[in-house]
Length: 214
Image (cartoon, rainbow, N blue to C red; front, side, top):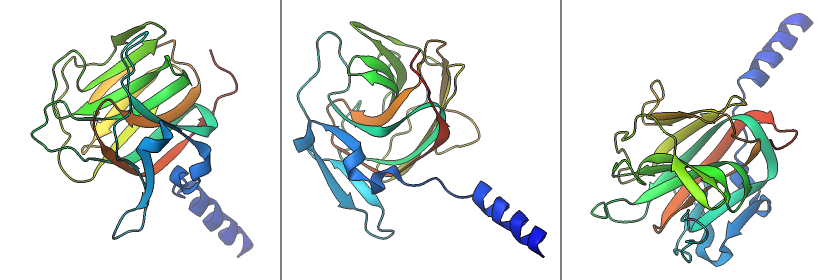
């Protein structure tokens, strides 16, 4: 009986859903803080982080997301991120976006996943590496299918110590885009946009803590 109970407990722990990191607002670094607001999603009561006002453009030394929210509580070397996203811009706006940040070291060293309603093979619907005063696309295929629609959608981003990145949206069996970046450091994670209002909910991550940056 005891063995059966222990087995059941172990199974339950193995399948436990990762905690929602939005449950601890104090652990998030919001830039600029005035652009973000904590809300609650009607229906399921999930905590929502809303970008209600676009922040100032970041053009120097390289163009990158204007407004960001970075989780400061932990750094990861391997992880699966799940987050619900919702663009608050009209569907007529070509290039509206939401971003997921990973390998975050500082404001000019990180990788971001840009999910958009446009795929131009340059800056929309890409995985982009920001490295000091440069940035470059690293995703495959070069122009993934644009899937950002109206309403809530779930985005999943996975990455590991080998620098393998996979991005899923709607279809969680086949990645929307992938990348390999051997220099991807263990770092913090976050969200953001360029110049679009958006809402994020149910930010969950399951992974291995990073011991040091590479």
